[in-house]
Image 1 (cartoon, one colour):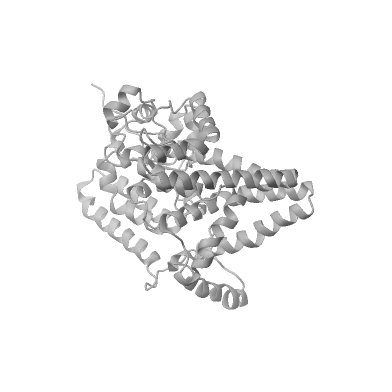
Image 2: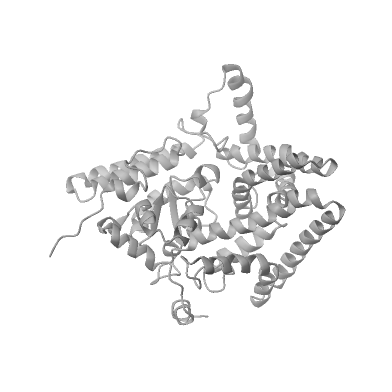
Length: 434
């Protein structure tokens, strides 16, 4: 019998690239995690390297801990999403009299000293999105309208993940700034495409309770997750019906207070947009309607990518119903959103703690057959699935545990099997309910 042809590390880990170079634009944490995983794969199967692997893991965890520890010499707060602090090289006067004083002040404003970036973004949005929207109603011009819409499109991802941290942790700012912490979401949510409080009700009070199970309104399990028609039904249902399905869900679960609150909040948002459109339609389209439509579509595109690969044997497992992405823009610009499995395992985990948590638990991830990818973000994950390009997805896999023994074709078949729609009987058997 011919032996299996194993996939080389280059082909398995780098996607379309031809070498395992680490992207210099990665966050420091992503670079540490990815370097460690690549080194672990190189050392796998070599008994003499077992101790070295443990030492490499311990060294990496120490580096990650120092990045987050304000008392450590290696501590680095996140100030901007585009650059790590160590890569910010301003002229000396600006560095001394502007950047460093801002960082010192901001660390006292945010709840955790790592999170200067949250204040940076809140200030940025309040000083750009709000006045731009107001002026568009005062004096409408087409270039301004299109420019405003594109600006909000650029802002919407980072803002949504900032809001994500806010709703999971009941705020992001220090206690004495509670007033700002409470106000800024209500000012900015409609401008970014969110109806008031809808993300909190749907994501925290619903999605994380149901965990992509049969009662989750954004569950992917009943859909064939590599079929365009199923994807369009999935997105269309959310766009058309979430306003009523979410309150009805809360009523079914005997959470009447949440049902009433989320319905009233949604209706107030829609009525406000309607009245503004009656007042002046053109700016309302660009300030509120287009952001709302694009946000809701983007949320479903992202959720499809996050939960398209569901294990057919144990779909209730957080390890097997979500994925981890390393080496992706989501981790730099959207606060480690790629560590989705880690987030589902502990929704309260701080965003800067995800890389270390993943590395600490990587053996548990391997034992539970979790899926880890690099060089592909959720949008392209969805696109490649709908193209049925499993070869590309297989090349983007970072094999952990027994996955390293699979050939490329076996990885393709592994991934293909995880997009099959669950029948009514499957759902009943796996979840104990329809």
